[in-house]
Image 1 (tube, rainbow, N blue to C red):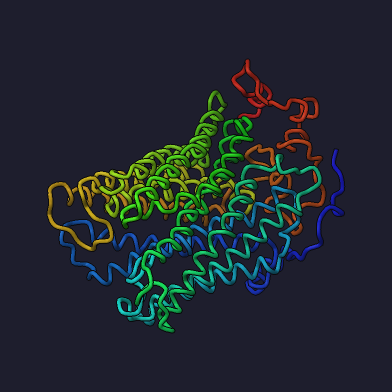
Image 2 (cartoon, rainbow, N blue to C red):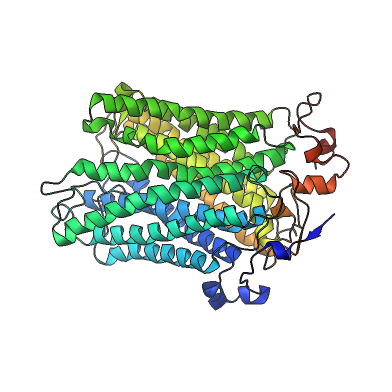
Length: 567
């Protein structure tokens, strides 16, 4: 049933297994799997750094009138924390999964441009280092959004903003190059039979995400150059007769699509995990893919809802309010499809599935609070309060982080050949989940009570101190849970149970190759005639392409023969 496939792939460079263990060869590698792991390592390192910065800020805010940090130092902390988490942690982690998985899922041997792929990573790594080199000259303190004129020379005299702008410019260029590579790889290097409508959902969302990046990041890069022209050459784009609102237009034209840049690959991971652990194909594949396309377009059409309070014309505000409500529709379609996939499934509550279910609940809560920002009077009341902080973290941390942890536990066996410890994984899951909700759920109430964001201290008003103390204690619970995740990763790498080729009994191509995959990924491929080629290979008597609907009405959309595979 298998066919030789060498002729279908481009010839690309790959490291021999022994050399891949050598540090210098890691630096010089162009193998997409090695680069993917480098992205994951870089993102994990800075996630740890950003998390420590958050803990310091939470200690400062644990009680009214905290004195651990001065005001300017607190501003530096939250600037570094926001920039680190978004650009140095979450984006590299997602690009790591995209680099590692996309060629495997579409049956390619490598990315279209392996050397360009490596170049993109090292630009990102250099930019990351550059941001923290600013500590030598005075770190930036204008926030991760660097609103003008606060980021202009008269208000930020140190070189911190210059380091910040240069760092983001390097990282933005590297990310854009990687996105272009992902697009070309998807379009040109799919294996024979792997049509666009047969691609796994993670590949679909990675492809669309790469398209968003190529349109969004150039806007940020242009704004960064204009800001440096102002600061270094005395330009007048945003200050001295220029427009501070112009910075906000540029920044949020990038900034709101950035939210989807950080969430689409996470949705892709969830769309892989839920069907596998429900023992069903994903419900409404076409709707999930189509809604992603709609979100890609609408993500640019809602950016000004971050600017409702700056005094735009009322018709403009109403137009962006309408588009903000509209984008809830394709997002809601995804949630409904994930829930429908779970419905009457034969669910296995393994650790990846636990994180996926927590993602589903938390992201839905974050999405609902997001819709409230489309209502102008509510937005005016809650903007720049902790209600925004709570919403933002429920979407990006409750959504992206939990999806990343789900994907990490799901794909760790493929990447290392070892299973993660189940008991330690479950303990870490409960600590992370309880800690996360303890930190941010109460911040909704703080915001509605009027506590402003971006303040280093606050008065002793009724309820504020108690809720902030709950938030701070929960932050340490969350931190302990994440430390246990790291411990599990390191311990299981040495002592974990051998995983085998397909430990979860999944049906997409990445599970057809060895764990970890050999250089070149595949020597042979199964025939690809449906979205689940490994199911077709295992069940030639009942392949997917002979049952296009793939839903059994009698048994609740799950095949009886799939239930037999439940462990």
